[in-house]
Image (cartoon, rainbow, N blue to C red):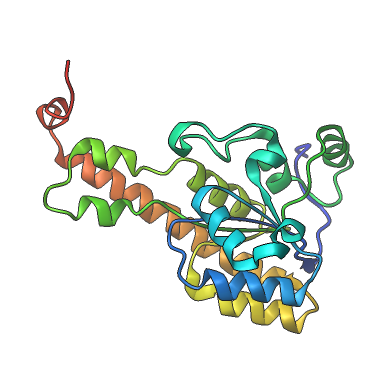
Length: 225
């Protein structure tokens, strides 16, 4: 049996640590305020513009609720947000399993925390390439890297982590947490994982389809060589 084979899981997982990084901020204010109302001890990790938005929502109370990912990882965001969440502590927190003693030792060694829910939607690639004047460089700049990685990691570990990619699901998720004293069921985590992999598959398909339509001369025209 593989060393990473899981034999014990929990039907219900309390949501204590949430990682939020969203391009589409629709419904974000209501969702994060409900999370804190349901579980006053919940903690949110966030990046860039999402961090600023959540900070504005909570005002003076933000410091007790919110941590910038760069402060958590100890690695500042690179210029223009090029690298924000691609960090060992983030992925250990997403992929760690509740009953794995080796994972627990790794968490203690690195000072990482188990992340119970990821709320991520991706750079607007399809909307960008739908513009008639878009260039390959503009399209390239809207290929999200960290977002799909977080979605895939959290969806892979649906045994413990909820992966929320659609603002339309915010109320459903919050309603269940309210009903279950701050926890989410395995049923819901699995349904969210199914949707998450559909989301990243469609995203990758859109990128591949766009690139197929370009010629190398289209690409070269964007740059000085």
